[in-house]
Amino acid sequence: MSEVTRSLLQRWGASLRRGADFDSWGQLVEAIDEYQILARHLQKEAQAQHNNSEFTEEQKKTIGKIATCLELRSAALQSTQSQEEFKLEDLKKLEPILKNILTYNKEFPFDVQPIPLRRILAPGEEENLEFEEDEEGGAGAGPPDSFSARVPGTLLPRLPSEPGMTLLTIRIEKIGLKDAGQCIDPYITVSVKDLNGIDLTPVQDTPVASRKEDTYVHFNVDIELQKHVEKLTKGAAIFFEFKHYKPKKRFTSTKCFAFMEMDEIKPGPIVIELYKKPTDFKRKKLQLLTKKPLYLHLHQTLHKE
Image 1 (tube, helix red, strand yellow):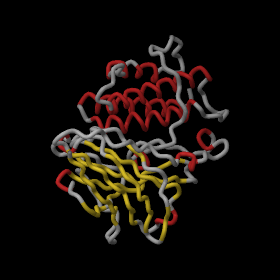
Image 2 (cartoon, helix red, strand yellow):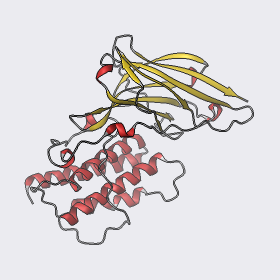
Image 3 (cartoon, one colour):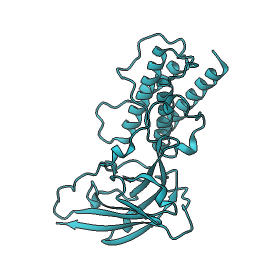
Image 4 (cartoon, one colour):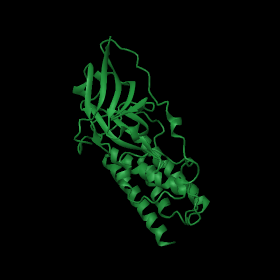
């Protein structure tokens, strides 16, 4: 085994242990980040075409399956109603397999298949790529993806009304950015999180922005909150992550984020401040994106029976 491969396996193992530690301590946001970052590295190695890889095709398949398991655990942590959950004790069975991947020859313990390489980074991944290598080979090979193909977004319809309950529609009008015109295929991911950063509603993506001008990217799109306002837990917040495609790195990245807390839910227009990535769902280490008067412009409508 070469020094490079030994070092790579050690770093993968350390990353898996970190994720499992966060998971067992209940630090779910950190665990999800760690799992998703490691999954992307494993997927990249599993699909690498370069000849200097020390991994056989069978070993690459196993590496891909481990990545799938990390994605499954990550999904289980984000879901409130997963029946077939991939548990932490299942995940811990992966560590010896990953550590001994060059000699592992048993049947993989879980019935999963490798999945395609993720193109969207986990929150803060750009800052935390401790073992990112050049994009040559692997993910960089082949024709560029057509990212405008993802324009439809994943917006959900308004929930049925209930007597005495309030529904919220948020119109995302525009976002102010000094380099607005340079953003490629920009869209916004909207999520509702509790104080621990756990999703309270399904995550929604807007379609790609309708137009860009000067220092604004215009959306003019309605988001229907997927929970009655009265049912949101204390301390919850609505997050808006502005994302755009980076052709040189060939992935979609978060540029900045904004959030709105429960006491800001009131009818009419509102402008909210933009913060530097990585997205801090726990709202503990916030850094303003700019001192310039650039904001996310929203308009709220409350619907009550």
